[in-house]
Amino acid sequence: MNMSFGSIPVIDLGQAFDNETKPKFLENLRHALITVGFLRLTNFGNYGPTTQDFQNITQQGIEFFELPEEEKKKVEMINSPHFLGYTKLGNEITSGKIDWREQIDLATELPAPTKDGPLYKQLEGPNLWPDERVLPYFKLTMTSYIDKMSRLSSIFTKLVAESIGLSPNALDTYFKENQQCKMKIVAYPADTHYRNDVEAVQGVGPHKDSDFLTFVYQASDHKDTLQVQNFKGEWISVDNIPGSLVVNVGQTLEAITCGVCKATIHQVLRPRKGSGTRLSIPFFRTVDLESKESAVSNISHDVWKLKEERDKTIDRWGIDTGFQYRPDFSQHPAGYAVFRNRIKSHRDVAAKWYPELLAKVLTEIA
Ligand SMILES: O=C(O)CCC(=O)C(=O)O
Ligand SMILES: [Fe+2]
Image (tube, protein in one colour):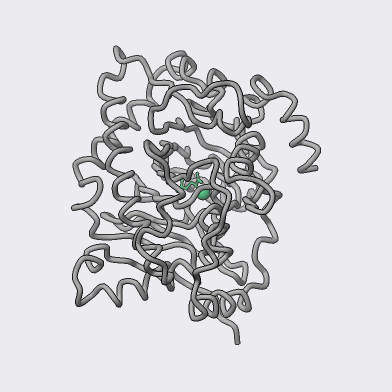
């Protein structure tokens, strides 16, 4: 019988830096990337954010969502051609349905790009920061978190390369000097109905991430909210384990490795009635938008065999996910699919800044 995964592997980063434990570490990582697409990363404090950093960012997140509507409106995403800023409840669409969450999208601070060249270059640009008089520590806390997570994710990327039999630097070409990384702080208010009301439970609908790798910090301890779909179509809950980050493969890493690393479908259910707002902080490692090649020519026979074995286990997977653009290096550079997915999710922003492309996307996804 072909089995699919029933839980999410735990990967202890400390084991990567000891010659005794490194081979086992790489084997576990390879298994997680190929046959699950998700893992829980532990013991990373020497290379990334500390417990204090997580407390600080959680506090700033709570304070941001508590701001009066008019302060949040000042940094609404509609004001940003770069898809950065605040999205109010009910203003985002995933898998064809409305998501019930509010969030602020942030990124490595970069200057606005010039208007020439492909439209996807507009994904980079300056953040919309809340007024310093109302949230004096917000910008500092977020900038420092982005710096530390950028470092952790770049160390981790080298281990990802090694785990699938490539040299540690094999993926370096996908990241440029001052590479943009993104993050969000997301609040999911608790349900007002009971769980049998199917229409009411979508926090974010079933999807694959567009980026290279995602690192999610679950800042509150809700049960059965973040869920991963295994290859038999069953939903596996990924409840928070304090001191861990949930790491998952995005479609860009999947494309770069020709499907060896798996971008696995996940969703968030609204927290149960009475359980309070769930706060979550995903960090997205993204690649140079101009990247247009896969690294697959170097992937060994053994690793390729693991991918093929996994593919045989996939049957009832993805039946409830709507259309998503997927990077296809034979057609377009990496930025193309990422930008079109942003257009699809944030239609009011797209209507203001890219009305012609929105019209095209709406016909492409129909
Ligand atoms: O809130 C979470 O835990 C994950 C959110 C997510 O999957 C996303 O925003 O892509
Ligand atoms: Fe996601």
